Image 1 (tube, rainbow, N blue to C red):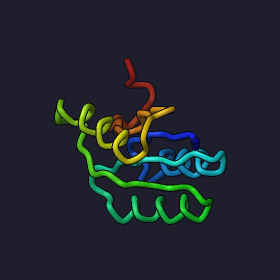
Image 2: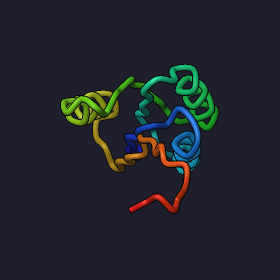
Image 3: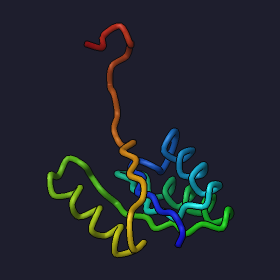
Image 4: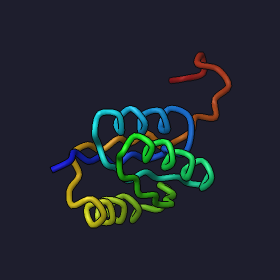
Length: 100
């Protein structure tokens, strides 16, 4: 049985890198994006080049029902979830000095 992961925010940046790293390690995955479907498709293409399955789901984590829906759909697609990576989110601060 292959290992599986649910990775939020994987349409660019760190999330995209995480998805590729997990694919290299033999994981199939569900990835999410909020507003960058093209980036999610690019991630899927890179993951599939590494012989891993990759399912894409659009999700805004502002909706409190989204986490349960994502987990349910990921289990439906993959059969189970071994690893959950919560990478989605943005920080609008312009300086680390403003972090409390």
